[in-house]
Image 1: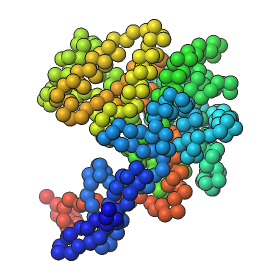
Image 2: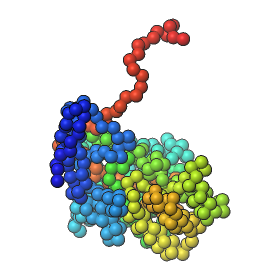
Image 3: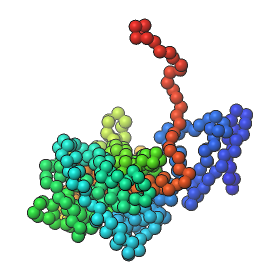
Image 4: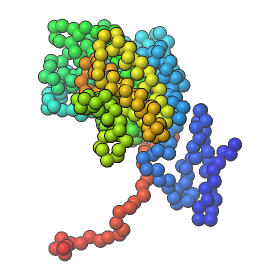
Length: 428
């Protein structure tokens, strides 16, 4: 097997090294291309560009494989918890009992926000989007930890715990603020996901009745979203981290990237699509036909993925969880019926099969959150809570890489050529 690739350009031949990953992923290393040839590569949207080496997550989109630190997502979904997976992603290995207990205790000790941050919540209008509040408050929270700016490496363990723990506190507070409800503080006795539901839905003098099935379903959503390789938000976190910004600032940037409807907002778009189909009295059949007509303006949300050209493994897991939760709650949902009909139609329709469109994780996650009682505007926030460990793990890789440099992509300029300044009085 050749370890070099040859590039022929302007009558000259250049040798470029070929690098190979653990799973036989191969890439042509173009690090020296500009120095050798005066040329750069152009890859709009980075679809064929590897931006880093990483040991965190492996995806094979053709075979529908997702692994965290080498462990299949199917095994983690069945046997693990979100907090254990968070430890796995950040530390690189599964914890033993003592390590997991210590990590959980560290999360509990750091779940409260500084009381002065309550004044920041009061500054937002009641109709502010929770993602705007989340990104702003993560940045604001960093102001109360000046040690972050002094030596972020020595503070990493505790700052990681603060972020993972406080992101759900901020999220719950932002929901309560949007509904004009009093803030509910976390309870030390509750575990991570149960505590979040308590802060979301309890009343000052009456605790929310925790349903074990609902807690497990939401914990699974967090787990399935914990990392997903170099997606838009994770790449943003690494970009900001490369400037040596602190972990709070980098995570806040990740929240902003996640906010977009083509990324974290997709699960909200799915539910809005299903609701529209239901309101129109359709079972999905008419919508499917319209989606195949590019002039109709109808777009099938929750199908297809930039990476997966097979069934998203997370979608299979979450579909079973959705059926299980609704069954245990003894609750039907007409939107779930429409979703199942859409899935069956798409997987058997030649138009979609040819385009390799399969359900992705967003397709069923919204129905689970709807069943739990989480409002649509909070769906993307749930994604951000789940993705926080992956962002932190990627941040750590950047900060601990001795060869890391500030990210600085090139471009191909297509604007005007040389022009000269024209004084105002001489302009037409």
